[in-house]
Image (cartoon, rainbow, N blue to C red; front, side):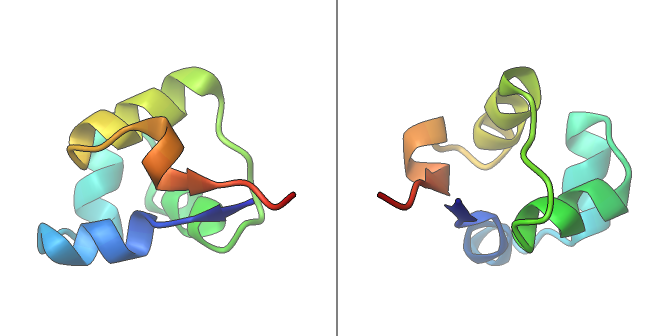
Length: 64
């Protein structure tokens, strides 16, 4: 699974720390999700998508 978190964070000029605070996790969690080393829960995925003004489907790209 790939994500567009880094791209969308840049659009809103948010750091990993800023996004982490908005969704209630540690910066490292955002880092690991961006690197594809951690799959977030549905609740966390929804919170990240909401914070970045997008949908889960547009935020996470699933490899076939």
